[in-house]
Image 1: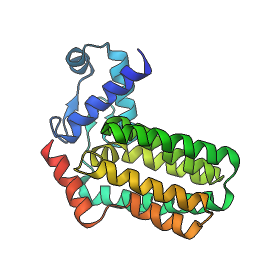
Image 2: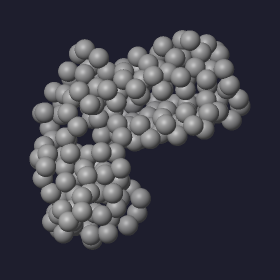
Image 3: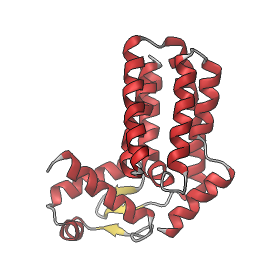
Image 4: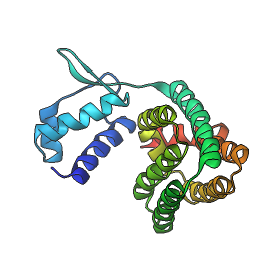
Amino acid sequence: MSENVGRWLRDEIENAILSYEFAPGERLDETVLANRFGVSRTPVREALMQLDAIGLIEIRPRRGAVVIDPGPHRIYEMFEVMAELEGLAGALAARRLDKTSREAITATHGRCEQSAGAGDSDAYYYDNEEFHKAIYAASRSDFLQEQCVQLHRRLRPYRRLQLRVRNRLSTSFSEHCAIVDAIFAGDGDEARRLLRTHVGIQGERFSDLVASMAAR
């Protein structure tokens, strides 16, 4: 089972959960999922373990995998914390930027430009993930990087879904451009402000996310 197929399987199950095709409290049967997606139970089990790690499901003794609904308030709180962590990472990256980090940010930013230009929200999501990881690494704080990656992983399905909101793809990339400029200019305060705004979801953006979840 290739990495791409494994990722596809996880994303398909994730989409079904976010669209409420699999309802909160519902048990996900490995055999049923394997038959549905035409794979063996092993990759299904691996996908469920990944979804358990980010809190979309919970693997319980004697019950197996059960769908969890964190609710809008919990999702908002996670984005709120993520925005602060990313802001700190950006500020430190601006202060501590070296040649290697600069090259990594430039490369991932370039890939985001390509996928955004193609209008491919799923490809952009994964390129965007690498862009943010490059900023975490540029902070040169191992602990901060660990915390950012962990929370980013938990928010993965919602960040991916958010990119499908109308015009969000082009807006996200424009925000990336400003973030890169601030980090490369060594302006930590501006990098922090831009990343907090980029990651945080408030007002209309949060309403759009909740609506897109309900509409799927």
